[in-house]
Image (tube, rainbow over all chains, first blue to last red; front, side, top):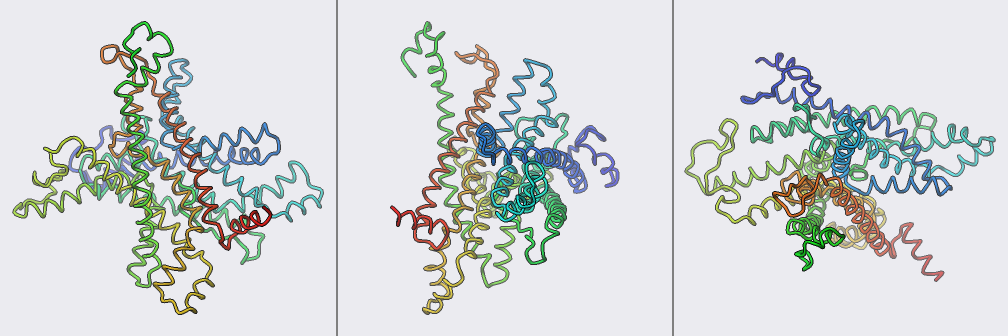
Length: 269
Length: 296
């Protein structure tokens, strides 16, 4: 099998398209690179879905937590505590077994026991909690002058939030949020190790990497390949988020612009 | 466990739960909580030591050492930590066996890599196949500790590296003006002062470490996740006196509560520690403590 044939057979294997059987013997480097790359599709899928939907919920939760009304801030507090205070790994397990139990009650829960929906839901809630905490921090550190200026212009209610509070929150929270995005994508590797089954061996990048490591007893090839893919993905995320950061800060004079400084240990879970 | 558990008539009522939760197998899950705590107790200082080494290396004047330190810090950022966990457990195991293989069987001619197999001579196997069960478990646990320490050492190195840079420069200049050498400045001025800057990062890291402990399960250690799956699974009357359906969701709910409690307790303790370290420091929280004392 030439490398081109391998790519044709396995490039979309993680989606169930192509060769049915995974390679069993005589593993080539090309097979490993292709299959692990194919698995990255799952990581990108989970990360993107959770990031986009989580962004919306996170904003809502952050505003709720900042509210003076107890019935709004109290649930937001608990939501953040539960999802930030417990390991994502346990959340996956719990959700999977909960959906399994619910499935026997009502067939509507059937799709939740598969990774594409169930795991995506857990990741969505989890990243919402972490991002909400970041956005809440941003809300808290809005300069007082900005709010006073908004009042002076006669802005109130939603217009005030839309035109002054929200853009400033985003600007302040963006570097930390970039970190969260990176670690969200890293967290997607947990999905297929936590109960959610990889149906017909359709797994993510780490699933295939550990498949090769188990078969060849040689961890020194598949895991570095996986590492390269993730470093590339991380660089892409930093690139995209850097562009957004430039746009958010475009009104500021050059030296006051917040540079995208990334602090790894701040936000891992 | 309890005497009344032998009386069948009691089993229909609430004491049944007490009997159920104290079966021999359940004792194993309580012991595995000890495993988790032991892992935390050993890993935290070792990772801190790794981190300290990494941070010092990253600040070194000797370029290759500096690159090594910075590379160590950077690599963990780009790659998911569980990839490291899965990698190091095999890689370290093979490294140890390979070293023992070279020492114990020098006459062995074949390569240790044969096709898809990794083969070392019988005497070099770790642990030896004749070793008792606890050695096997201890070896697996030891590998897990080293792996955790390497990964979290990199995160700690990053925090400490930042903290060392956060110490006001005037402090170091003053030390120099007093004629202290570079090593003395490091030991007497920089290290004692950096902790208060490092603490927010380190406490975050502790939380992350606590939340990473369920990954022990992936490293093949029989930890709480293993037992929760084991005990919660459907049991038929053939195998146990307490048959039940799929209760795994309840076991994992209990684990969630356990970890939430761990987080809460840690937060409280770290808050206390932060106040203690801030005492007399030239930081905002140090100033707050000073004011509170003056008014009191």
